[in-house]
Amino acid sequence: MGKKKFMSQTDMKIGVIGDEDTVTGMCLAGIGHVDGQGKKNFLVVDSKTHQKEVEDKFHELVSRKDVAMVLITQACAEGIRMTVDQYAASGQVIPTVLEIPSAEMP
Image 1 (cartoon, rainbow, N blue to C red):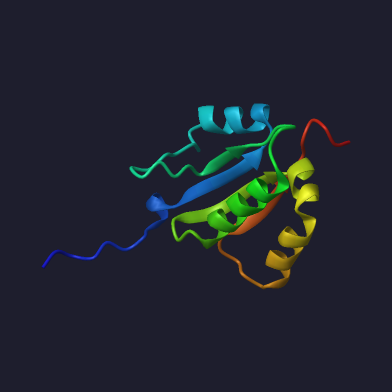
Image 2 (tube, rainbow, N blue to C red):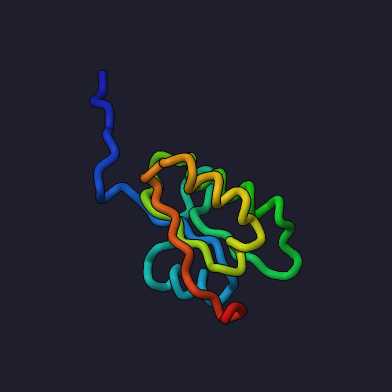
């Protein structure tokens, strides 16, 4: 029998939901990851992206065991405010959800 692998800090990832400029910058900084099944830890949101897609990706990222932090731009968070607030009220600490400023919002 092989040993079971436990998640360590080096295995943890950061999820990103935001506009193209933000996600591209974060991916260039090394945050972007695509696993063998094609699951990404980021989502580029534009005018054609449905709110349901953003909400589904948010739920996917906060439920993954290998994600320690989710960065979401303010504009995207406003679109799914109820979902983000429900997660904050749940008291879950990991993954941490952090809203970052976006170019569209003052």
